[in-house]
Length: 293
Image 1 (cartoon, helix red, strand yellow):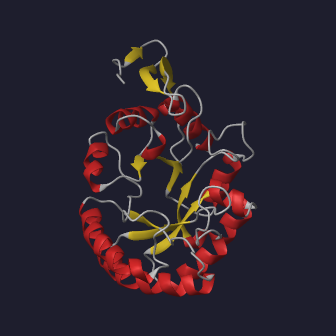
Image 2: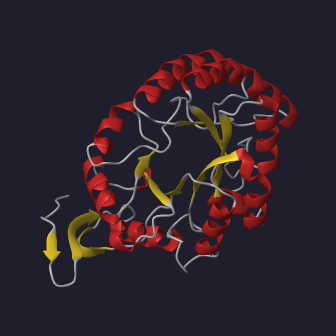
Image 3: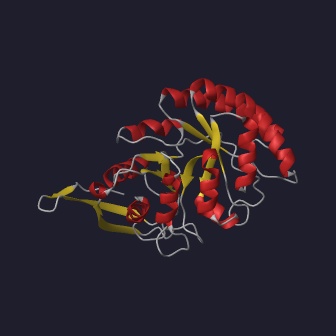
């Protein structure tokens, strides 16, 4: 992939970006231009994007995100934090332990290794101004929700002591167990909020993934309003399919994002859809504009 020079249109004050993009679904190289509308952004929403959704080098994505007017690229490892900083971006939420989504805090066998990895990550994140690190409950594997809750609390307790010392938020993601992550334990908002209450720490909250929770629960806006105090981060995605968040899917994101910010939320809205269109950066820009209330 190669980026051409930015071309300024002096008459209209518009920035045109030339991008040779690879479609992640078809592997077809498409050379096309898109218009940067960052001057049109309203400045209320902080925009982020998850790197894993885009089949391109991080430098290319960072340059495009900067031109779109975004503030963050997330779910990065420590080695990548400096890359986005070069483009004036941050990492709104970092990757956590590398055990994978099914192997989380609900299994005591994972506690020692999880503590080792988070004990290394938390001070690094604090030193680099990374304020949030993701974590997962893990799969049930026959375990009851009640047992999983107790196990998560025990495993998280020493992690949270370190997080509180360094001012870093540990954030557990809500995922659907119906389509994408079968048997995942933290698959309903109510279970996640119980864990937040049990931890009793200002540094432990939930990542409310709108795509996943639409699949599991629906009633997205009411749930967000009723539980905003437990949530510190949001992800987007079109339902069904986890593709673009435009009118090709069932959720109306302008209303959802407005409801989020009406609660007093001042964090990030992160695009975590898998682009289906031929030019992924155009899809990303469209998602940003849809959410820019």
